[in-house]
Amino acid sequence: MASTETIGTSALATDQALAPTNTERRTLSPLPYMLMWTGDGVNMGNMAIGGSMVVLGVATLNLPQSIIAMVVTITLIAFIFVFNDRAGYKLGIPYPMQLKISFGDKGNAISSLLRGVPAIIWYGIQTWIGGTALNEVLKIATGNAFNNVAICFVGLMVAQIVLSIFKFRSIKWVTALATVVIMAALVYIFVLLLKDYSGVIVSKWVDAKGSWGVTFFGFIMVLLGNYAAIFLSAADYSRELKPGIKNTKRFFIYFTPIILSYGFVIMVGVMLASATGITNPASAIAAVVKDPVITIITSVFIVIATLSTNMVANIVTPTYVIQLLSRSKLNYKVAVTITGLLAMVSFPWLLDAQRSARGLDDFVLIYSAFLGPILAVLLVEYYFLRRQHVDVSDLYQVHGVFSGYNPNALIAIGIGALFAFMFVQLAWIIGLVTAGISYYLLMKYAFHDSRFKLGTVFQSKSADTPMDRR
Image (cartoon, rainbow, N blue to C red; front, side, top):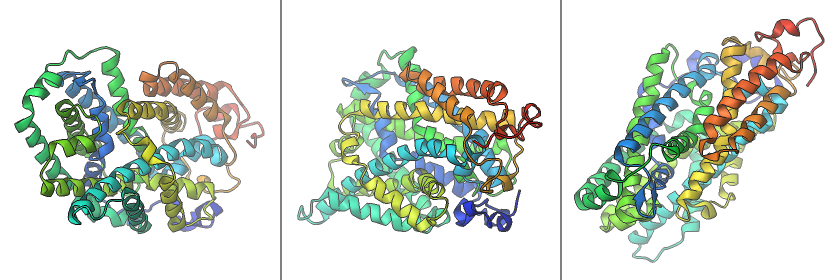
């Protein structure tokens, strides 16, 4: 791997946030890394995904079907993490630089935006829900003298921007604290539901007819799509993990916290919706938890979940994307502030899951139709075309091999998205497969003079010809 000092001379690495992470800077050990993913899995958006399984008061999948769907999904998520985090873990590069390998420094603007925009919108949605919870705390504490969700929303956003300015390493204590508080609150709600609502939960969910058809596989796609943006940018996180951890161990580092958090939150979401008939988790929790003290505790849990989730999943990547698009003219502090401001004006109050849980599912499926193809291009590039061999120093040259754009990658994600929208319920997997096949064939047969074939298994076909300056 090229040294940070050498790469730092390039115009694309004037801010160290985009430079490769060397061994000395990798401070995350497996335990805090797992706690980070546990905290990420526990959030109101995920609970809303679980609630969306309940339609007209009855779950579309029964208990065995739900459990199998979650186990299958989370197993796939862990495998995808292990495969796609390899570039960041091995080379120390962030996601925007990983994109550059396939798309080029100009072409990855499109792919970066396709990943960054959903993250920013989720940032806004999560903060709005967290602001609503914070308002409940202040309303009870002041005896209803204060009641302004907008002020709480802005205040929480400002707090997240300030915390984010201290970068990735400074959130370990936030994640650890959030994990303890959140899981305790969820266990309480889970026990409360079993105690007071077991009969209706059994009739509406456990004994539901369910489906092993399109509905079953469609729910797997929603669960996968909900994580699509996160495991797509796995390099942003794995580059902070201490070196020397084998693939098998990294699989369980992802699988264990995600099954405990994401799986458990989905189940609580289904139970809440089945018990109350309310698919929005914030409203459902309020209906179940009537004690003011418990309401405050639960609302605090939502606020902490907001902080933990956003700082892990919704802030880091779009901030790096903004830096990349500005060609590192904006430092990390400025870029992270812009990310927060964009999330603030993304109208999250109009996208709040309380309006339509089905709408949330559609939002996830629509953006996963683009993210599945991007993941396919990255995996085909790194494993099949380059066999995990990349000269990192080339990534940071302004007019190097990866400058310009790779038309094959852009065409492939277009083909993948086109096929995905033909059957949106299975958008992620359809887009992934069609884009992966398309990219391999395009790289083999199209644009023979493209320099993006240099260093790939198809280099021999273009090695003796002038390289196209796309």
